[in-house]
Image 1 (cartoon, one colour):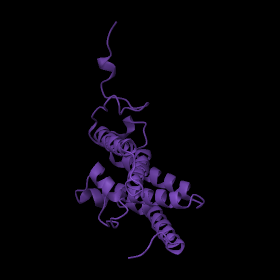
Image 2 (cartoon, helix red, strand yellow):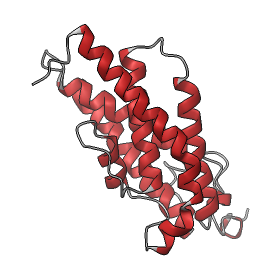
Image 3 (cartoon, one colour):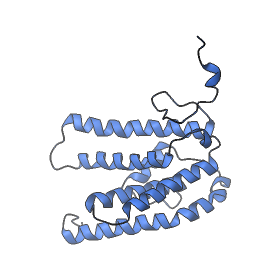
Image 4 (cartoon, one colour):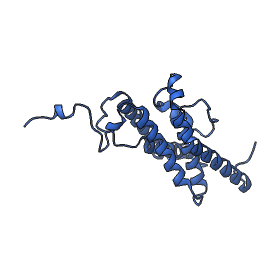
Length: 198
């Protein structure tokens, strides 16, 4: 077994994670171009939260058959990992923004009701990647974490999963967002007709 805590192995892990994230960024254009093939094979317009969190798990290998948005999520998770290990790595923010934009473009091109929502689904996936990493780090901490801290990080993960599911239903099926999940800028279909009269 390789000891990841040695400086040489940490440098190697950083380099591999950065290479992997750069590769994902480079494939973003190809993923969007292959959308017709993906959807023609019966793939969903957007992955559910289960598939996204599976892509965010660092222990799992990358799935070549994963949804294009899940592949972008994987890249975001790897970029967050690199940034936390070495905050001085140049270009991380730019690559994260590219992956977030790729998710937003995919959504705009393929989700029927995406135009109704002013929220970036790429930003939500980016937040999911950060929250998942927080949760895994607290579980792997050498000291037993306080139960409140453990509860809070997993609560954040759960809230983001629900938010993602809500947003997918909103942009793919046109369902109204719950009041808690509704960001400023999202229009609920038929909301004008339901305004109370005074």
